[in-house]
Image 1 (cartoon, one colour):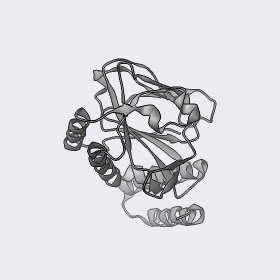
Image 2 (cartoon, one colour):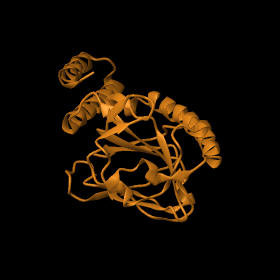
Image 3 (tube, one colour):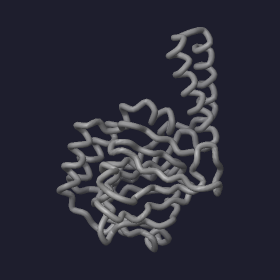
Image 4 (cartoon, rainbow, N blue to C red):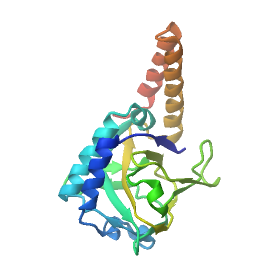
Length: 234
């Protein structure tokens, strides 16, 4: 299931992010690729410990912390430090690949299981052609192998998708695509259980908007948390 998270970064944070990216010391993206991905990866990335990357990480993580939909959809246990990439010119695409099951942030001693992948778009989609994120079996309600879903979002919006899915970034034929990418280890490892909890939580939100804290809303909230208590690993 693909889930879109709008407005992770507001106008001020987005403008600051774009300013930082404009002065970024880009390097070959293959530096962070595994053996299989390196064969199809042709982009640029920020060194994860450079000043711009550290400042951008603070902006992105702050935006995620303020977004209730992100928490509801991912139930995060760990968030891998956001990374940043650039597609354009001679470095313009990333072919079909699957993300590594576990990511290690050098110097941190922390390993993150990649239950959920996230791409946060940072460039105006009208400023570049191509660059769609294509996830196989990614349609809402579809299973693996049941087709592809193509995503190209407004700057400041993010898309979540299962880390198990084959995906790619289409060639950028005009302009520059800028994005942040990272992974989430969820408290709920099962994709099916996470989806049930997310759907449950969305309906609870709508019920509260309509009826307030009714007896039914309170009872169903208890059921939600009992399921989360049963399935979560903290």
